[in-house]
Image (cartoon, rainbow, N blue to C red; front, side, top):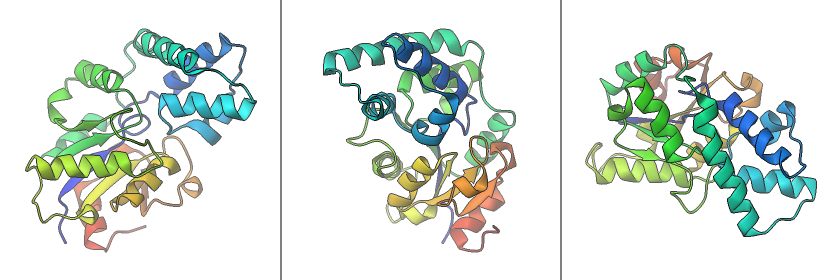
Length: 232
């Protein structure tokens, strides 16, 4: 078995943007009288799409809103995020990791973030061209932790000829920062690396390998994982 491709999560893996998402969630929820602590976000809601995050927070608070009001919350967050993100960009070492991995195999992104959020940061970082394949929030029937985003990324890699028609999901590695994302990747049959930017290793039980950050992920790690001889 040989490494065929790598699929990156975005927020918390490539982009240091989770604190920004949290802040914007807090601002938007406060407009309807709902509070969300940092601890609650990281314990329960990180990794969900915006729609699912709002829905779960409100459900857990016993707050019922209609679809129109939910759409207003989503639109408000969508409008505020580019303003708040400012020059917030990729993690140190992320661009170098992308370059060395993309020099070896095709790469893609499967994320719970909205496409315009992903493209905004990639454009500012000069890396948009590296990722012809992006699967973003709302582009699959279900979001993470369901397998749909990673299954779709794999399908697009194969349909577009980036990887061989004979390639299997187990020939592809997903890099994630949350257990929700790791479960999504594992459900789609991909191999998994967890980076410890959002959680400690004990909070990522579905990771087959862990590394401190994206800067520490090497092509040798990826190849070893697919080959079945990856170090812990």
